[in-house]
Length: 357
Image 1 (spheres, rainbow, N blue to C red):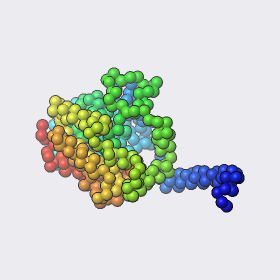
Image 2: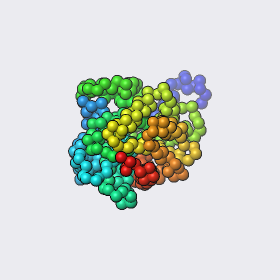
Image 3: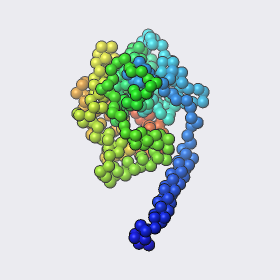
Image 4: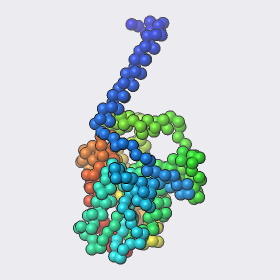
């Protein structure tokens, strides 16, 4: 059939368009079913986040969240760990761990997170004093929010060492939709400089679908890999973070300022600081997309006399999917947390970070 006949008979192209749309919908429905069968999803639980109307952090974990049926349990102070007295026991050394979902341990048990594995290593292998490692990681946090959490909560526990788990998306700014919500008051501390621009509605729709559809997330992850493999001129989340570490990027400026303030607090409050750079778990070989970003972060820390360890060399050569929580979740699994814990342990022992004070 020639194009002219199709134009003359619109029913033909309407029918073909309808067939195409139905085929795409069936493809996605079947894909969603298959992915959810391959990767069983835990029954939904109440949100573990709460709004913080008087804190620049904007959101935090709900104290006491969790039950016997959930692997995530939040203590009375709002972080994922057991209960601790703010006053340390005599001769006890204490580490406070800051970070986002990598540090929090999305998808793994509390005891399998790199901070708790590190605690076990330090107590069994090297330290002559008891060591407590507090996991204060909060999913979605950036470096600025981690700084505020340290000031509001972490300093009360008088840490001897603060570990900052730095992931490449820590240059993201705070979500302006949280500030625009009628349910949250304007924070007392000005935070205008750390709030991002409002996103277009199409971007909000994209984020909504990405959060709801496991198959959509699965497809996006692989499309991003194809863009990289064939060096296509398409901007993705992956290419964005590759290019985010330049002097004029507001998010990187704020991350650097926050790290400097954490280091300054260390001198005032008498604790050491160790920044731990996590890789994205994709293409862990010479084709790794974000090597330059790692170098920028490491170079900045060294310029400020901040102790830093880049975990990328420790993960190079691994097949990325062997380090994922699941087929559709590229957060680090128990094995990846163990590798991170061993690398951090070596860094602490090599530089005697717990006994410098």
